[in-house]
Length: 74
Image (tube, rainbow, N blue to C red; front, side, top):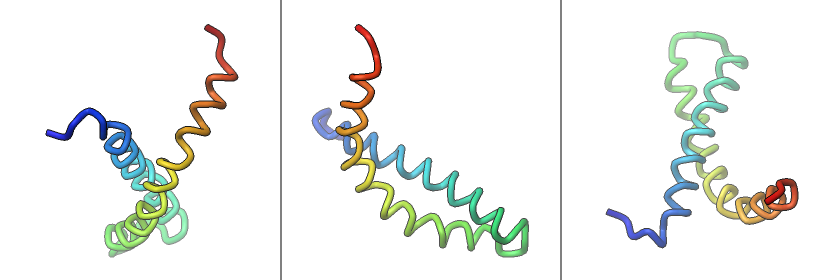
């Protein structure tokens, strides 16, 4: 098990992985259609996307929390 103090990192890792997987799949499908080898193209687009998405989520999350806090009422 991972210590609770790392939960925000694990959350960002999972969230960025899932989101980049879905978005890269849609983008790959729109660019190439449902062709033979689609799965390989998808994965080859997803992996570099995840490498960018994960640190981006970690950097942008605090700013996003502040924006949300200003937009909601207690």
